[in-house]
Length: 408
Image (cartoon, rainbow, N blue to C red; front, side):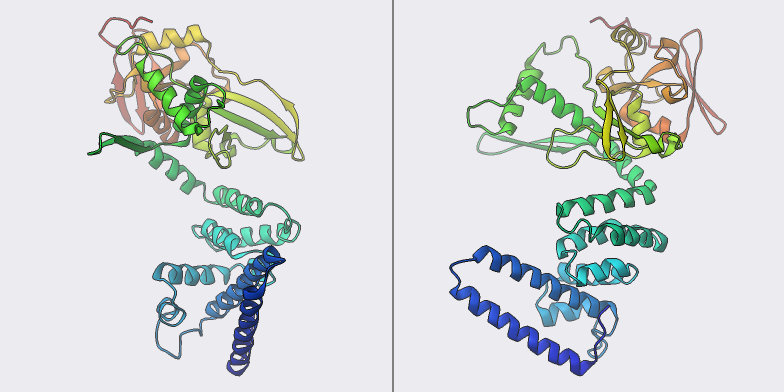
């Protein structure tokens, strides 16, 4: 880390200002090599930011003024309050990540990468941050010419492994708070918006893309094609027979060296039709979707795919229809979610040898389905059709529906 005296710091500051003045004069006259000049200026700015962050991390930045570092940055550097807090927070995190701080000071990591890396490391404890710092030490130099997002993605995956509880809580919150809202406007249009968990949105987008067909040469964006598909889908058989709920496809990526790992640590990614990386699922999210998702198995050896299967559903169509006719909706006690909202759950998990048979399957909405996996509810189907849910001495019954069976 940088270490200088006050007089040396004054001299360095004067030299930095002189260098900035020279760059500005050259930029004003530049007509050729403008791209190289812009890149050099941005990299120089990153190095200066690294210097400032290192000074702040040592704790003496605002001692003489008697003000906290964020306020000093606001008042003296004209930094907004949000940026001042961000810089101070990052400086604090980097004190426990010396290899990451050094890579930043040496120009190996950019300010953009540092912001993303420290954001991922923020929820981790000291041991977790040290683990991420070791990852940076191994990969920063070797990936310096690679896609800058890659090392960030590696750190995010490492942080997700360290703090599995946070990943699971975020998934649970997404499931619980999913919604869609409609807001009419005075000009005759209606604005609608919403949020959803990765699994539901992946299934929704797959359905819309299938209904919209391949991109059309009409010059319209894909978003408009998806809207047309949504209107077409909701206009078919209004109030009539239901279609099967779209199931997300997940990538079951297994490495030969990790096939003997505990399945409780296994995590997958959802095949994604939106911009960005395929979302990573927690082990709980993976177990939930494996009950009723189209699974694409891929075997890797040292990062190279060596065996790829076909997307398959674990439940035959005729079995699915039989369970839907029996349950007619979510069977968790007290939940009245309709059949359209449900997935099929394997009472004995497939990974433990559970069969896709009526006596081992029940319909659960996605919220209740995740609740079963997350809290370890035990489920028993009695011969008379009652389904018994037990956990820690509590016992609840779900009697069979009393209405007529649903028809296709």
